[in-house]
Image 1 (spheres, rainbow, N blue to C red):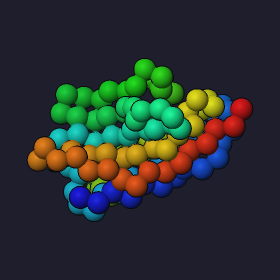
Image 2 (cartoon, rainbow, N blue to C red):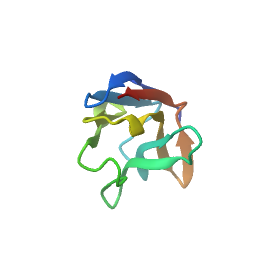
Image 3 (cartoon, one colour):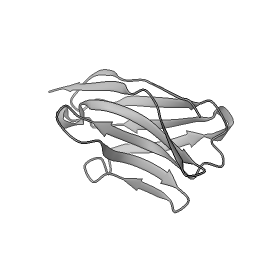
Length: 113
């Protein structure tokens, strides 16, 4: 599975961005799919995840970010609202299928205060 993320860029605090991640194959039967991020000097952390159990968000983005997917387009999205400077990071899309993890190349989000 190959993943291509896009939509990153520069936003002002309080603004919005939408990230997209296109998969090379069908996303209808994946075990998990979602977004992680890594800020400079920090570990990669969960942003949002869709699994067979449901949808989970990292504590720092709950109520501000929304994950969704369009199975017909093999694409998942991350709508980011009320952005904060601490949301600045490289965002990676992720899927798991047949117990193998796949990562996209990352897209940089920079939020200016």
